[in-house]
Structures are given as structure tokens and as C-alpha cells.
Image (cartoon, rainbow, N blue to C red; front, side, top):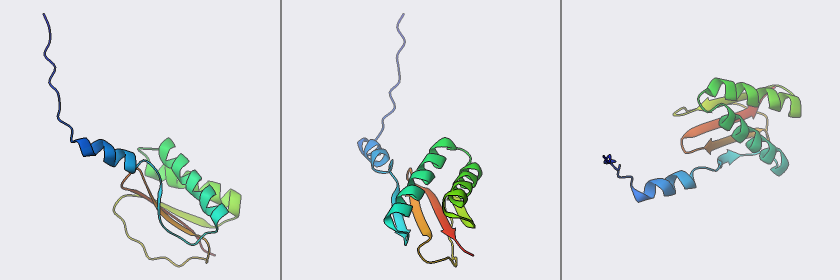
Length: 109
């Protein structure tokens, strides 16, 4: 007896979309190149580690940036949010990861 498997039709461009959005996309940043690279790497690591828990990812990012660059850093991780903030110059990063997951980090004193 053989079982018939039902195939699900997946649009061909679906895989292209997933491949295109599997890297971090920086929407706005005024950080210097070195700080931006480290912050971006940290955000990607935290979002991959805590895929289903945005609060834990934000906490990891905030604590790591506090240790690395001095406090007080702030972090928001999520989908479909807006923001208007006051921050220190050269200390803002707004990026997307894995398509629709946004990460905003900034420092203010």
C-alpha cells in the first residue's frame, strides 16, 4: 500500500523573499562604523537566540551595550511599532532583521 502525499504549492518568489530578508537591514544609524558593526552583530545574535521572546532579546542587547559602551542604553525589539526619541548624537541604530522584526537601540543621558 502506498500513501499519496499532497504537495503544497509554494510560490517560487517566497524563497527569494526569505533569502533576501535573512540579513540585517539598517534603516537609519548615526553611529560610527565600528560601533554600528558591533551593535548590529549583537542585535542579530540576540534575535536569533530568542526568536520567540522579543523581551529577552531586548534585555540581552541592552545589557551587552551597557557593558561595552557604557550606560544608559535603551532597546526596543518587535514588529509594527513607531517611535520618536531624543538621543545622544552618534548613538542610534534602527534596523530590520528576518523580514519584519525591527530593532531600535539608542543611548541617552
